[in-house]
Image (tube, rainbow, N blue to C red; front, side, top):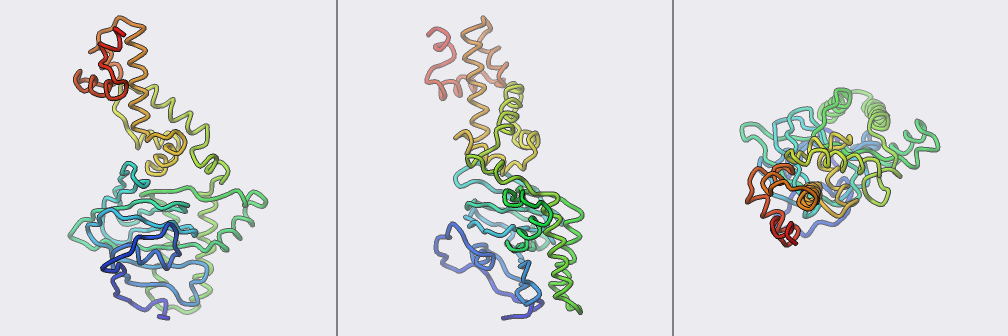
Length: 317
């Protein structure tokens, strides 16, 4: 087994990869993401956290990321990129990231990922997994009986100065030699777990109720859309309204409603247009504009797709 600070330059994507599993381990995830492993923290000091540094391809085509049980932080340490995520077969959600930005996930299901990095500098990231025993122990000490109902909220392309400080210290320890490494890494790992519980913990029952959005977030999101039918659909603004990243809001909204947020918004527009066609004497053009369509032909196309009738035929019928 190599020392925690040993540099390894090994491509970690096989030339003919088999289909990825739904779940894997932190060490196993490495084989499913293309790039080169630069450093791997698998020595005795790294029992409570498992860290790896990767140099990623500048352009990565879509691939499936298996779920991992451990909380995972992906921290950008070099370069800039547009990273896109989506639920399998869903809508791509983009995050523009640079040095210091991070992703946090404890997704129970696989998801799809792709990115495009700037070509003039390496795109390097550190993966850091917090062990389940450490996370559970810290959660119990901080939250008592409530710890059994707590997990972590997902973050895409976030920025957190304290988190970056802790990750920077762990990165330095990973790539350099220092005395008392075991104690230092253990202390940093515990501090990291405390920070995650303090700032990113959410009630598991709330998050997983019916495998979807909690009711109050769903109600706030749909009300927000209903009040802005005449405005362009803005997923980032909608997700921010309910305090979530766009990617994870989109996944949970679809689980709650069976529709993507954008399709739900379109159907809200069409439903309002149907009401206006039946209850008012406004022209079809005016009604189309009232629900956000400046082009009459585009409005008619969407309306027909959703109802099977043109707006004029719907009004007559």
